[in-house]
Length: 354
Image (cartoon, rainbow, N blue to C red; front, side, top):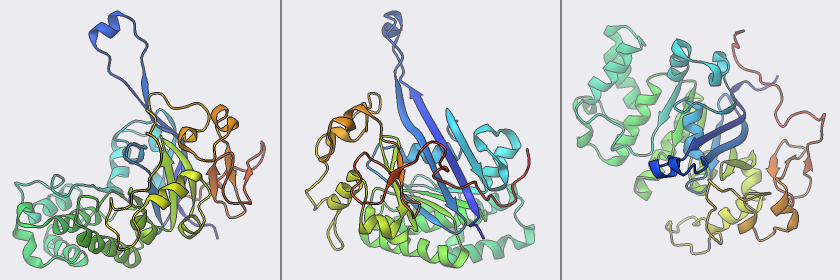
């Protein structure tokens, strides 16, 4: 039986116009755009964690906000469970879909209302969304706090009474109380101390097993992604460079960018920033993305074709994909015309006819 697909994104694109000043408008300076997300396709299956990695500015957060329809996509489709294509959905149906897609943000200090107790926050969520009867509010809130390792007396305290790690636990509880189909965790531990990071990652891994969570986990830290992810997707300048099972990618990366990221990442027990080897050169501007493969100016394996032609998607027999003219792992072939798409047709749970 085919695995149930919770989220199916196809050829997603998002660009932002660069604001021009009055003088530039008078001079008829051409409008320029940031291509933040370009031709991105992937699936997330029920109960799966997809790790999304890449350098800062590669489009990870823009992608997550476009999936949530906080940004309206310019191209592509976002098929989410029983809600159809969110790229073409508005109004009540979009609000209902967003209830089933909850986000855990990077900064636990700014994502909680400082003027409300935890009880007030949770009660408001339960009441507004009519998630349970009024006489069940206390039981539901205490149960969800227990799941994230917070004591009962936390309910009557304010966010300022908690440490960063405790606040992030509360943010996770706030997302889970909605009983979402999908959680998007956008750099959920990068603002925390190293020891606290480990606690939160262990908590998310535990909740994933206990509650069969489906999650898009975004991070620049490959160590964290390796630990928590079932599959990994690597982005660079808005494009997906490589995607496959986490164990395959971390054992033998197929794209030069992935390999260099892994070589530059701190090793277990090493502090972040202690590893001096990194990717050579500056990341090109997303306004002026290089011709051909966007990574070719920094790639040690690049040749003339890399600067002329955008790589097609290549796949192997396991369904792993890479966008590279010269994959570092054998067994890949470019998808030919008429060959099936990289992904099978979606098996979306409870799909409604529009």
